[in-house]
Length: 359
Image: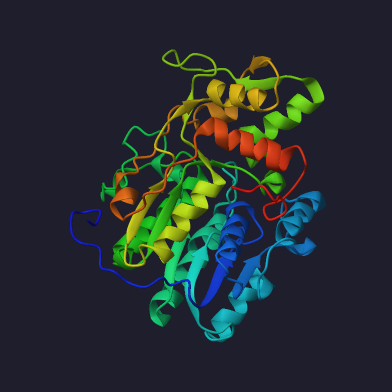
């Protein structure tokens, strides 16, 4: 059954051909390439920003971490994202015929303040690739975001097609929301897929700076101080550390993403990608200490003023629409996911594709 009750037409996987992964040196993008490699796919073009002149706010160390993400992976070609855009605009067949495009490249900083940059990088770029895909018959799967839901007051139900009800809390969320609105207005949504990632964590995120997950940050804090800092709550209905998020392991996130090309290539629209279960920051932090065999040592610190009005206190993905497309894999339990991340990647300092015991 489809998400609206009708039958989902059966079609063959769109992965049998040339694949484009934008943001393919980044966190979720490199994980998608890793998962494609595990399925035997190597005819992959990766577009991303790795050249020093394109680093914007990234440090050289961050860029080096992104390069390390690529080293264990197999792909046909890497191209800088700005050069990719130019070449594709000049010659629509410059890179051959893609059967699937995973557009995961974007500025994902929730504190980015340059609206013009976000408008070009997150909105215009996505529009260009969507139009190319629809014209050339490629499957188009792009990263929207749970940030489009704002504070969650209007719900986090991906079945509600009244997108205008949503009010993102930051410019990043607004840039993602604006493309969702554009795709709906243009009538593209039935033919493309926008995936709304919730709080994804896992290997290959070391380059993300302040946008790294708590698991990554907490592990580093524990190594240095033996303790972890969490934000105090500034709402009376949530105790300190009991703010809640839907934490999703990156290995689950990529399985869900590939599902729309592999098992549900006819599905269209916006889909939540989350575990479907909210957990507190305390639960997550205790799982990190448990994975390291340590007793929890937690300090609560004041949340910066700049974040207080833009902070989500509760997120939980409604995943019924995803399940209705035939996605039947079990979600990795949070303690198991944290343990896999800590023992397989953080402690030995490995990237996806470098650990023999990978799930």
